[in-house]
Length: 267
Image 1: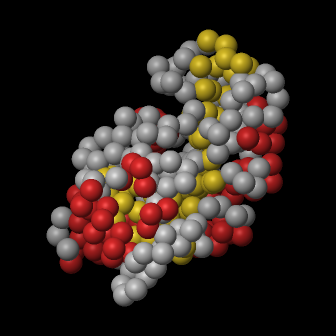
Image 2 (image 1 turned 135 degrees about the vertical axis):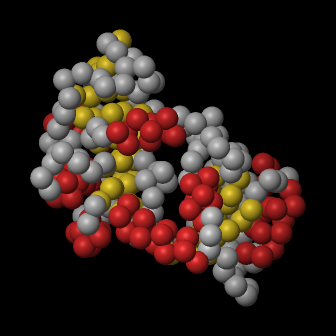
């Protein structure tokens, strides 16, 4: 389980019935074939910024975006986003948003709610019940509630308060680190952090070998590896990459890669 800032998201779409919903201020769109999309549950000022980040030109593998919010009308008709009016805690609304065939869900904390974390938990439970395969990124205010969302099978839990404390501490020791993080987590400005499947050509090779090879062939810096949900930053020694691993790289844009690996793209 990884607790990170809102901009990573991640990162993470829904279809159940052959019905229509709105795009660009009233245009009717048939969602029969919509799948592998990202559903943003709830409307807050963060939603607009997240949507624009997810539409950045730096992201190659863009996915359709669905905004599910308890509002009578689309709050952002100027954006290329599908809008579904409904309460994200309700199964019916999630189904209208196509939850069963979604790729990911972003659950935003409702700052107008008396207990925003409890509401986020209800939404997460509903999403995971309807589609256990969906990748959920959930915002939480109180770090003590992280454990409840972990039990609800949330994939990533973003506690901005906790992250802010860590960042203040680090910036007091390593000056300028807050600007570094802001740059890396903001799509469209300089380099960003991307997670990619381990290239087939690096399976069986050490992390250091992959680091040197990738850095020599592309404008990428390899910084970490992930195996079975555990992330190792700059692993030492003879850490050998395996099938199913993921790599984290710093790059000016999302590296192009084939499902079987990055051998062709990195050559």
